[in-house]
Image (cartoon, rainbow, N blue to C red; front, top):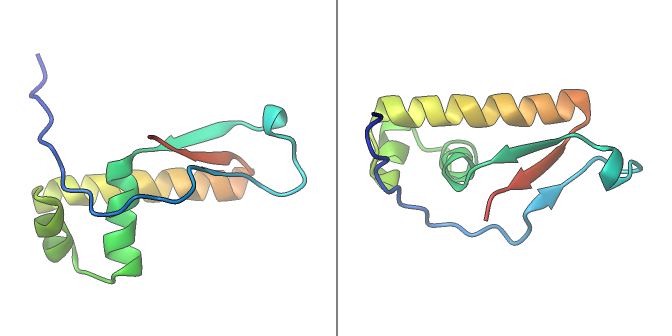
Length: 91
């Protein structure tokens, strides 16, 4: 049985929850979903320019967990950009 997930601190609420390539209808697109945790990790690391330790402290998670979260988020975003997929942010 897996360990229960620890609640993360999310201090940001996105104003939109869907991004798609221009000129392609939604029903023709594949979709990638990113979690609120992944979005917060991206915000702290890339927008706020915090180091991983500081960002992990703000989210109240360990640095290795933060590292896995940011890797997952970047992989998903990269795949969406390269392959022309839509990005949905979970509610």
